[in-house]
Amino acid sequence: TRGAGVKVAVLDTGVNPLHALLYGRCTQGYNALDPNLPAEEFTDGVRNDVVGHGTMAASLVAMLAPEADIVPVRVMNGDGVGTGLQVVKGIYFAVA
Image (tube, rainbow, N blue to C red; front, side, top):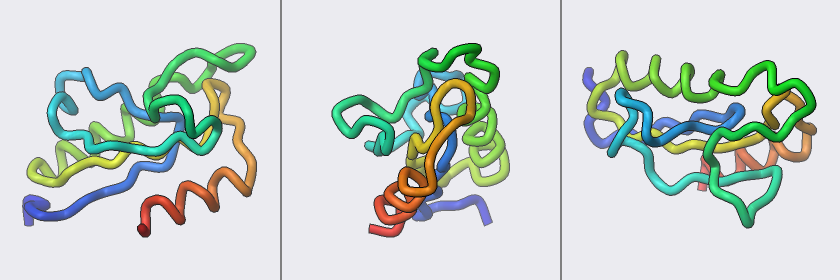
C-alpha cells in the first residue's frame, strides 16, 4: 500500500530530481524530446507556462506512494507541447 517495489513512470514535462519530495526517489529516466539530454525539467519553450508540472505530478506520486520509485519520462517541453510520437516513445520506455 506504500508502493514498495513499484516503479511509477511520470510522462510529463520532466521531473526535478532535486525537489525535496523527490530527492533520491527518481530512477534513470528518458527524454523523448532529445534522448541525449536528461529527463529533467528545464525552460526550453517560448513561454515555459508549464515548467514544474511534471515535478508536481511526481510529487503527488511520492506523497501517495512514499516507497515507490519514480521514473521521469519527458514527453513535453516547457510549454506543455509534445508530439504523439514522443508520447509513444515515452510509453515504450516506461513499459520496458
